[in-house]
Amino acid sequence: MALAATMRPLVSLALPEKGAARLATQLFLAIVGTLLLTLSAKTKVVLGPVDISLQTLAVLLIASAFGLRLGVATLLLYMAEGAMGFPVFQGTPEKGIGVAYMLGSTGGYLAGFVVMAAIVGWAADRGWDRHPVKLFNAMLVGEVVMMAMGFAWLAMLIGAEKSWQFGIVPFIVGDLIKVALAASLVPAVWSLLPKRP
Image (cartoon, rainbow, N blue to C red; front, side, top):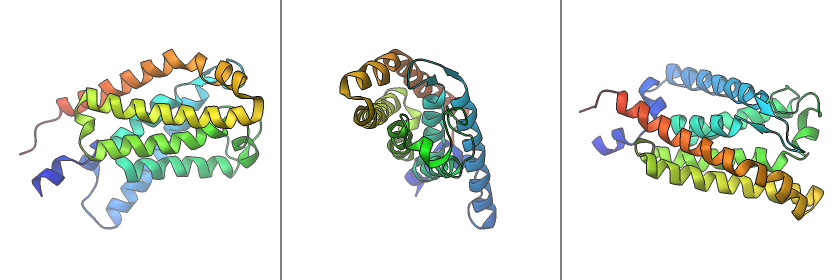
């Protein structure tokens, strides 16, 4: 029991134990998470068919702070908002909205965000969010999987060579920095909190 209590994600410290209050708090956090994802998506640098944004950093932080279930639920809510036509994605509404946008050049990356959140959230649920090296490794795996999904989808649209050139290479250094930053921030927050008996 004591071990289980210490292996919960950061957000568990703010959640009521059970009942309607817990559900309401989780819903509130998921909505706040989608707002953070939207803001991070709109913070971008235009580079070819897929822009660079702070969204990867936001996904990593949400997943490591929220854990597997709430992290993935937040990403799925974000995807649902986008599918319904809300301008939550990087290129919306300029490059289209809704499902049509999601099936465009960023479709693989969007799906990859959900998988990345699952990988990092799983690690956070096991206490890896307290250790920068363990968390970095989990985040790096999530990053690689997300990029592979983005690459595969983009390759179907524009070919493998262009997908590598425009969809992977420009992001490598920036995304490694984001992974390192996120893997440092969450354990740093844990280290500032009082130790629980």
